[in-house]
Length: 133
Image 1 (tube, one colour):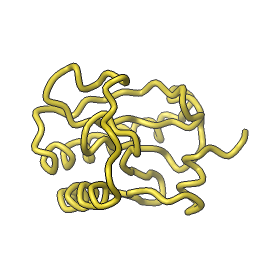
Image 2 (cartoon, one colour):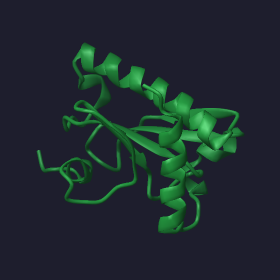
Image 3 (cartoon, helix red, strand yellow):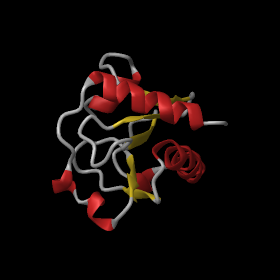
Image 4 (cartoon, helix red, strand yellow):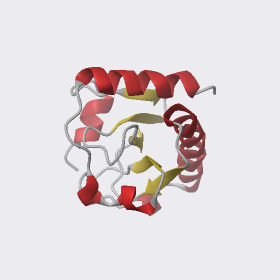
């Protein structure tokens, strides 16, 4: 399988606004966010389809999604964190964690306009400050 853009981010070949990383997963800001604070959570192993993950890795990924979503909700002061897993744009499992206040904010056509590097850095900093695990 060809190396995905996410694998290139993991390998440091492409920069990202990281909010959490360990030896198994990476969470970073989506550069075309649906809302401010839109995070992508990926396993470090490049696997295309969520349900192809071994059970242990699948469970771990969702445990991490829950922890990051809690931090994201606090950091972005939002009512909910929406979750989307569709996997068509990049052949590498990725969970979208999207701060939302209504159901319209999860529509892909509603992507936010361009954000500055400073905005991305500030949002990443706010989310990192709420991660306590």
